[in-house]
View (cartoon, rainbow, N blue to C red):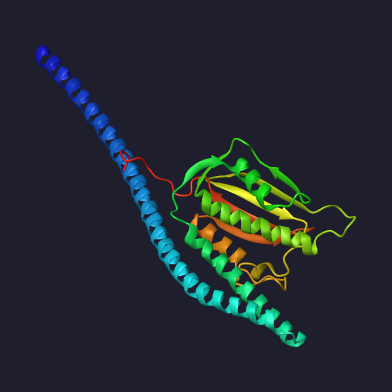
Length: 284
């Protein structure tokens, strides 16, 4: 009976060991299922991002084709009209008629400028991304766009890298800075006051870069209308600059808003650290 009891105890211990082993296996299995589920969710998100990028590329390609066709169809007759007006202006000696011809020529220039602004989309070949220094990028853009008499102050880490489409981001920043320069030149400080100034501040905010572009040009007359096509407060400007900026930022999966500060305008950008994140092939 004692031997039988000892054998039962040994058997019970082995059964307990098996139960513990099964429980451990079940726990490991649950962890494996959770890990695999998480991997599948990540892969699914990556596929969605790829689909989004593909859709954006297709839309961009379609827009490029449309804009190129329109620009070509308008430029040809516009060149003929412009040439004939120049010949007419050279032969007409009536001041009133010369004034009307000059007005027509100015209108043609405005149309040509508008076509050039629209044509910028057709220069975009793709929306692939590459990593580059945000600080170096901003320094180069401001050097090309902002006149020397306007003071530039760029605040942010020189080590910060952004992965984005440099061509799209260049077009975006160029239009924002040109808008700031025009505001300073037309509504900025009076001669003798503090010089025109543009301050660009950027910092990481979660998965985004927050980029704030501030100027002392007097501010937006109506911030809510800034992104409306052809909205402007300048009589000689009827462009699409800020409208393009809005759509470019959307294409880059970012956000943009504008407001006024004490001295002028502030444009706030939320740009992804990685515009189109992709997983490597093995993880997908």
